Length: 480
Image (tube, rainbow, N blue to C red; front, top):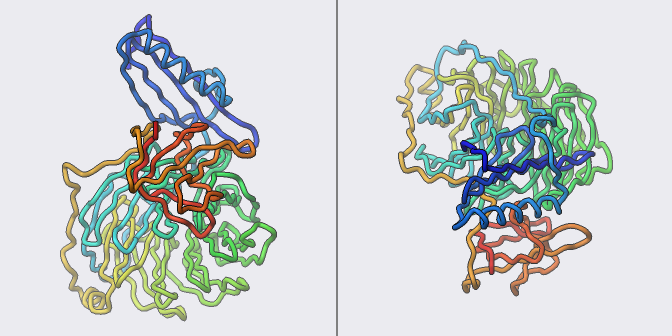
């Protein structure tokens, strides 16, 4: 926006000690237009613009917005004086594969930027890149939708059928409802490396070897500091949190009450996977190691030829897959026997997941790749026969969704609508269901940026979670 002498800009920040909020809010009045920019300190943030009939009404609206933020603790600041949160991107190199044959790639989708985030669900594939783009695709490679988030995507994690994207700015977005919304804010002093989530409990591993656990209401629960730094692995089940770092894997009780075990691994952990009874750690010493969840005992070692960037398994660990820094992908039997090694045909795999005899990988060039991992296809590939990989293109009119700090309003709830209300409770702003047929004491995981004391909203669909709260699945409208 080009400012004139009559334009006014108010810049506010909220930066709390002890790992609290680290946000800015900027309001600019230009004639009859009010522009609001907000986000994490040091980031470009999101922008919204509103028009008013007169300059006086625009100034009054801006004053109301500023007053709301000041009452929440924001204060005038000078932009640039406070540092942005630390962000570490994994430094990776990708050499050509030494494998004699190439994997049978069915299709490839280029996201346009380096990517680590991947999740393969029963109905679709998800991939997120460092431009903040998240794409959903069908298993046949058709691009279905795009989400544009304000910051680069660190990883994608699933909690049942809810999908969350962890971003460089410390915000974790819920992508499961009509529009993406900010569900968690991670403290600004945490340099996020990886995330996992189970029943609404978010687990964050970081550069310093820290582990931070946050509940569904975005409230801090507990934290630990493991012996090794650069914690690229965090996995959680009902019993424990498994934290992989430079010195191995450490398991903590799920409630944070203590350490269960620590096992040194052969090399620093760069990626982690889990099955019901074991966790798998890929390391910089060219191996994947399987550790028993109950004791930490190393049960098997899967030897690769280069640094392991990613690993995954077939159900119950029947097969173990690995991707290395030399653009190769491996398959092992459960006992560690190498079954095959093939070139990826396009960079090193940074994340991977197996489903229904297909291996999905996101590679160093930012591509989501689907490999036919059936026995017949692999046998043909090893003899030199592979299909021609299809390059998937996005449709020109691809649906695109962005986070919003505003919602549409309605005067009454439709018959299928569920009414929720924002209430002050023990000094916190909670969201409870007030429609009949729901547990009134359970909280709703709800967009934090649209919460207002006393406000009521109509939600199309709520689903109960095992953790004793509700999550939004449908559209949200404010009830006025």
